Length: 591
Image (tube, rainbow, N blue to C red):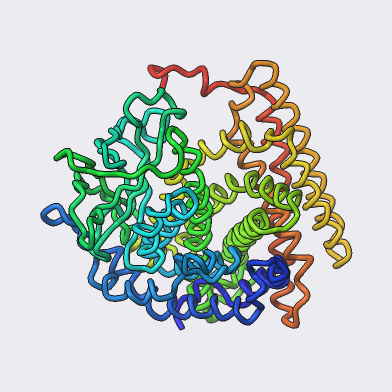
């Protein structure tokens, strides 16, 4: 076998020993499932990813989709396997039987799709976005819209996208200018331009359903005037599909994710683009946040997956590549040793391992909270899980992207001069990873979201719940015999974050919102260090398998992360408190 993408032992350990996913089968929607059905789902995705999808990665990276006569043509290898990808049924697997799903728990679905992302994240992007679009229609669409446009997506016959960004607005959705004019038949005429639309056109399926933000004529300015519309590439008229005046205006040539085209789309250039309102007028962002938050978690898993593939590439290389001799060696004629025997190479590998495993555990935990938030019978349990999910989403999106990029850079470093050549895949993986810190909300936006909204929401109830979760993990770690210094380091870090949060919130309440948010990116990094330390403590506590090397590896990863990263909290907290504002004061002419 070539690259394993993820080790089976790691996925099984997280699913069953750390996150205890089988407990979800006590909830009404999941009673038809058990450990064997969970494992079977993951195994089918794993097999397809390794045997079929992974071999398409390098060809689709080297030959991305082409724009020819206004049409986007994907790589023939990707087109040849799309039917098998759709047949896995993962677009709809997590949804209820009424819409064709299996009510698979989110956490199981997350780990199954992780293999697909690791094999070819651009290829998985098509079905990941389609799932989000169909779920929007399921939640907010009329019965007619669900029957007409949701069902074919869930069946794998069509795909879907979200079309938010506009050339003049970027991430500022308050400045969306696309127009929607009511018509007598109940539809709206859509007119406008969108950009950076992933999967906005292709020849994989006969239709693409776009979820489009636009303003109904006369809508108020700002975010309160934005509505959501279902705008297909081809609209259904009777039993026919009719061109809906959605045209490709241009293709963006990306450094990574090359299997998935990024496009500029023009809606209504001929005045014949029809869209249908999804949800309530002027409440489009409220609905779209469902898909955006799901996409943020998906991007987080993409970050973990990309780092994981690179880690396994560099580990295999380090085990095989011979170069140099141990520093203690005296005989220059002694055989060279595999580079994994050099301590600094092991340092880089252990750091990659800690980043990948910590990020993977975090994404799995957010999926557990999503399952509980939607399906727990007790309203208080649902509310608490939702608070934790909301709180952790900015970290789950940004940590795998930022630290994953670091891990990918280490993979290249381990490969030495070969690492920055296109003959080795780690170069392409690093290009892919960079996109994850930008799309679905940049790291800066995630920091503003975390500090400006999430940690102060409901009087800080999410932070209280987080302390409770970490306290429970600390107790389990003590019972498991984990070094007390590691446990205390993590619990003390919680107090550091709580104290800092209170101080910054007080600054905001006092009217200095700019000062509160000045170091929001540093706060996000600090918060992420704590959250990942918590994941490592949980994994160390649960590492009691028959494989002693496995157990030791988990505990050494925890020791490494806590020892090297937790001390940085003091510096970052002081920076956040200090109000150091050189970059706020610097003027354009001084740069």
